[in-house]
Length: 321
Image 1 (cartoon, rainbow, N blue to C red):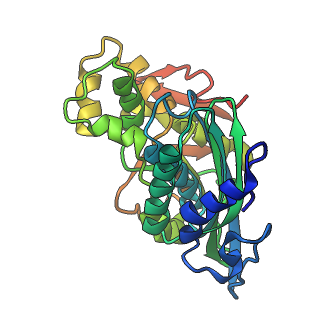
Image 2 (cartoon, one colour):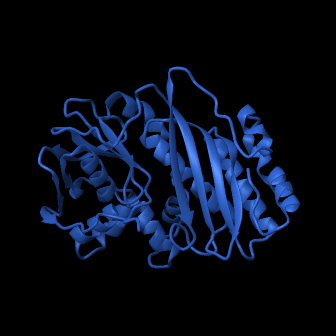
């Protein structure tokens, strides 16, 4: 793991040893983070699945967010990508750009949050890089996981006639961000927690392996991520937002909205839910915890309905620049 440039390298290497070396959890190929490369293990009969996501202050988390919460969200958004591939997490590489004014105690708190969630998800830190930046705070994780050989669930496998399903509840993170920004009430803090601390759906891994023809995690927005599946598969989709699974808090919020169709579109395009949207054959058993919200069609294109009528979802969610 490399130290940042422009500062005393001995101090930075010492900080890496204190903060990040314990996160290797003794993995032999990590070499105690004392080399500038790692050696990845092999697992016969399995494929190595690799994903990378970055999060940026002011874009993916609010300015002034607690350092440990930033680290935990970083781990979770990457593990969510592995969950959508039906992979078992095992390794990570970290790149972090510390902004000016980020003191030693802030960096230590970030490392504590990182350690907590690497432990939760059974992952070891194999290396990475630390740098300095005038801002904003930016960090990236490369996460790795295993799937049985040939069993990764891709985006590009949906077939006409498949059903479109989503796990859990959608829209809580959208409302959670609104709560963090002071736009709506969140008396018990549950909505804000859903935004700050997503729960990767590793628990649906076996269901995806058994039934799913395609899958993605809901990071950009349900409609946008469903559209990613359709585009990768060369098919069309019909999505019925009246079937959208909602938490009690989201259902209560929806009841107070003057335009239910627009409100449903907001929940389905806000992103950061980190649930799993997937397609499954029409004759397959619907796994527990999944809701059918649409169907796959042969002709390319997207039809979205809400409050009993066709609606225009726009981009459908977050667009990467």
